[in-house]
Length: 111
Image 1 (cartoon, one colour):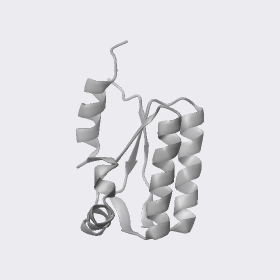
Image 2 (cartoon, one colour):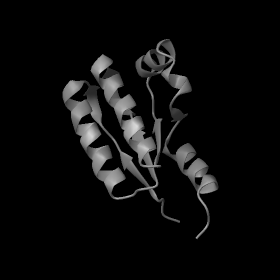
Image 3 (cartoon, helix red, strand yellow):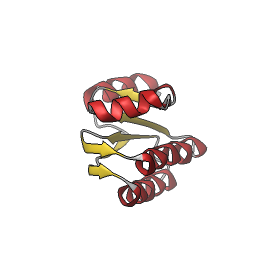
Image 4 (tube, helix red, strand yellow):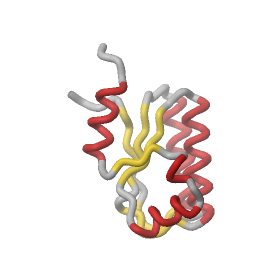
């Protein structure tokens, strides 16, 4: 079974510039009526406040379009940032893509 979710995988430092690119990618996907988006952060080494803002902005965009947005692959710094800002309670967080795929397969109606 192929996933109906689209995966975005930024790499490096999630800052203002990468955050803008991330928002642009999410905007394109929600405009295509994608039911779910996974932002795989396993290649992201650091997230600054602008990057966190971009993630929150992406979540708002997705929710407004009735699209699920989740994140996975958090390193210790990203995990700590989300916990300190209580964003770990806002985002759906998965350990990896496989855990997300299992979850999304269960949640989406069979066609």
